[in-house]
Image (cartoon, rainbow over all chains, first blue to last red; front, side):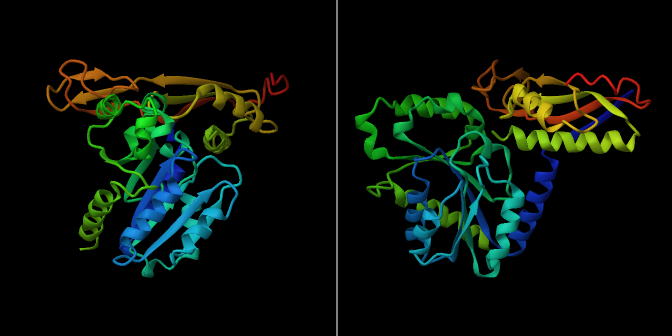
Length: 218
Length: 123
């Protein structure tokens, strides 16, 4: 006997993500879901972002790492509350993990929440967390062919951070070719070229984000 | 990778549906997977074989239908087949919006209500 079901497999995650989104909206919390490969510079990018915004906005960070407390400690040293989710080997964060982690944060005291997703360019793109903005980091040493290998991440992100620009001259990375491919995949994506090490280009990102945060708050 | 989480969700959907229909055994599970998802069909089958053991879905065939990526061009209005690596309109190069390709659906199941054949599980 045949039975029609037609049910979305990710419906459970989507439902929880919607709940998170509603809660973030109520509490006026702007949420950034940050995705990248291991070593692309997620943590130093977060530290740069904290540096640029912490005087104007109350921030917090949810760290989704596989099994470490190092990243959360580096964030707390900046005076920003951080919650560490140890996914215990899972390759992505899902909406329910975020929902559970929110119990450890006072949302009334937060304007801007950064979620550092697990280091991976594949799986996190599939799981909506209820975020306001999705950003990905690609660092120059990873190579300019990455959009062709992980297209979903490039089509699902609103912002692309090209990090480690200070290494451009030392690699074969073809920036024009890269931007051409990215444009064909996601013409609406906002691209920032910067170096978290030298600080070059970080200001443009901070200025743009500040504008988004202010318009979100009002 | 995350196919395990996806497969667990598929299994719980089909088990709930089968039980509410009085199934003794699930023979086939039909899944639709868009080309624009990060889900590998072979991984889903592999995990399904393992995690369905001891349930009425043990030994069920997992049939996966791949859904191509289609978009409608905002400039010329035509529907075109996009590739995973190039979203622009194949006719005029305009920007398109996705019509299909992001599906991840349990389409349906084939069940036995009589209990016949439940003794020869081909696991």
